Amino acid sequence: AQSVTQPDIHITVSEGASLELRCNYSYGATPYLFWYVQSPGQGLQLLLKYFSGDTLVQGIKGFEAEFKRSQSSFNLRKPSVHWSDAAEYFCAVGDEYSSASKIIFGSGTRLSIRP
Amino acid sequence: NAGVTQTPKFQVLKTGQSMTLQCAQDMNHEYMSWYRQDPGMGLRLIHYSVGAGITDQGEVPNGYNVSRSTTEDFPLRLLSAAPSQTSVYFCASASRVLNQPQHFGDGTRLSIL
Image (cartoon, rainbow over all chains, first blue to last red; front, side, top):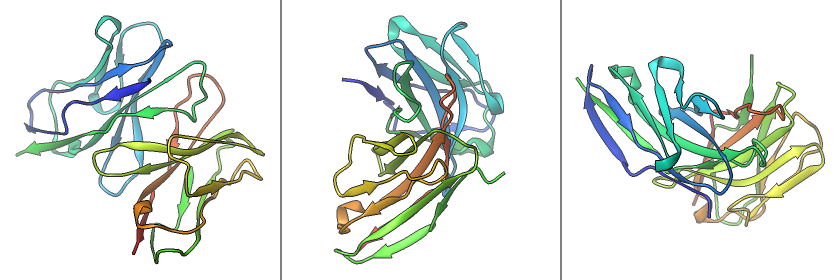
């Protein structure tokens, strides 16, 4: 069955520290992978996406993610977090054979920033 | 740039009542979807549509109906509200052009008493 696992429910990091949010997926076809961010009371905003090519993808707000097929992972990273990065982060997966309507989301990781 | 617009933003219903959550997009997107978001469960797909006149069920369709009479609108109907349907509902749209991500509305927070 297709699934996305975000093993960390809640992470707290100090402002200026580096960040890595984990995402593992189980998908039968070639995966299309996404990271979204959700601020309180808001909808989801796309941070970055991976479809093919270079396995290290750059996104908005200084985020990057690396696709590792051998580990079925797509971890999100940022070298230095800012207080404004506090939000919930969702990893999601789809494939080229399903429409953009059928994306599977992970359960999310809530990021808190320590001053 | 309105994008995806959801109304209402908040709603409280009594068990057994019906209501329609509205979703409209102005980007001429072919694909539209409804999700519900519950604590610790991420977003789960309720129904989706790949074009006007075409809808299909997602992971959790029971208790919900949809229709897609126009490209712009994709309303979600609760026929007889139940407390288990208390959730935050998100509508999303996407272009059918390959590799395009979904655009999300700001959500409707629904409480069923």
